[in-house]
Image 1 (tube, rainbow, N blue to C red):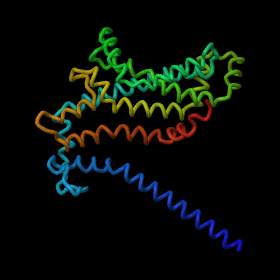
Image 2: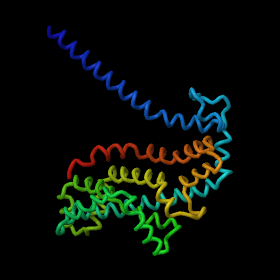
Image 3: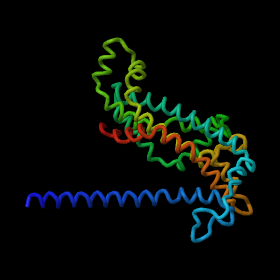
Image 4: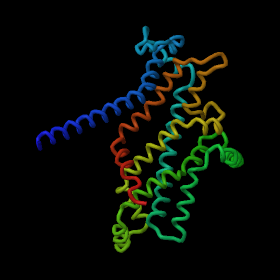
Length: 283
């Protein structure tokens, strides 16, 4: 009887695990199908993109789509602009968010929790509500139609402060107190103790910020008007002309635009998963 009971529990656990794997497999297929369709469409002539039933492997592979996107528009310039903007914003965000997070986590001052709560609550304000006042302010500052306007707007992130503060809160106060007794300054504690111990949270926020800035369409659409300042997302829109949409080229440009995001995730995926898993353990 005991042996039969053990076998029954093993069988039940096996089928539960099998069901979980089947559900995960279905979810993975559903999520990856649009990406596969995009790659397939990027290798087709424009007339074959929407053929039904879907032909996943094109009859004639149109490699020229990946050549034409660099010839028909100044894709290289847009790529450079986007890389510059993304890296500058990501670096600035890490600096400003980690400094603010350190103050909110480790430096006691009056109404610290209330101020942190108010700052984090700004995440709930939609961008559409504040975009006109922001545009007027930046225009008066003479930053309209410059990449610096987007740098100024996107270098401060309540989400980054929240994520990194949670990581700092998980570091024992005894470490910082011992450092103060040894004569280390607040900036020294921040740079030599807090930052090295918070790499997963910093990596997680860096990936979030990279993906957000790289894929941002509305911000560049509002602030950038000159062709020399445009980003990839605005460049892809050029394939949508007055007389139609060149879907094959749009998909090829989208694949090229997606590659840096995938590379970024592959490089930092271990820290990203660790950062997500540990964020929020202590508030």
